[in-house]
Image 1 (tube, protein in one colour):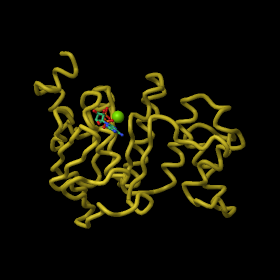
Image 2 (cartoon, protein in one colour):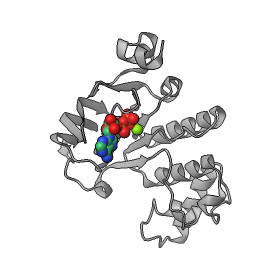
Image 3 (cartoon, protein in one colour):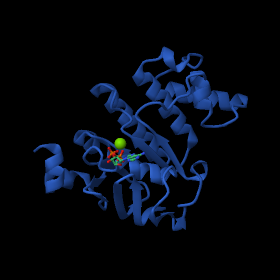
Amino acid sequence: MTITFDNLTLTQGEFTLRADLQIEEGHKIALLGPSGGGKSTLLSALAGFIAPTTGRILWNGDDISQTIPAKRPVTLLFQDHNLFPHLSVAQNIGLGLRPNLRLSANEHQIVAEALARVGLDGQGDKHPAQLSGGQQQRVAIARALLRDKPILLLDEPFAALGPALKHEMLDLVAEIVDAANATLLMVTHQPEDALWISDQTVLIADGEAHAPQDTKTLMADPPAVLRAYLGT
Ligand code: ADP
Ligand code: MG
């Protein structure tokens, strides 16, 4: 199970990102690099919201470049705005199982368990606006977990959380990704987050997504572009 960015070029207005690399199954990958460097662009392309200008995206050798987002093997979680405000917390999570929300008794039970798993036991009847930002993000994580896709994409998902809760959430994501033998790609601005959760890091800078490198090795001796970004 491999994600391949094959001679990929992505264009957003004046901006161009090149990516020619592979990500092997089961890794937890941090995407690190300066703001505006193209991290979100790469995730959006993998999720199917941006079409390649040139090149292809492959999953296990199958070209998924033209596949609609709903049919791709990915779940994408943004920094915020992941929930539907008019639906209850439980309904928002239930969407991960059944887009039409006609859940069986067993599926209601699965939703309740997912809520408990992210520390929101019994809060299913509330609406998102009744929860804090951090709690809302945990609801979004609960839904992402239920979708059970082989690739989980997180775009700075925990930027709004304090350090203790953030580490708790990172550990939860790691646990779930490991249990499902899924592959994680997570954008972060924080090198310590990359060290906390990822074994490999994809550096995105100067219009290029670089091949994955061992996170610890990279942080121990950062290349110039990363040093400039880290300010060290
Ligand atoms: P990052 O997530 O690393 O901060 P992005 O992928 O969001 O970077 O953005 C990469 C570049 O693409 C930026 O220069 C940004 O201005 C540009 N860009 C992003 N979205 C659009 C858009 N919809 N139209 C034009 N330019 C865009
Ligand atoms: Mg971004």
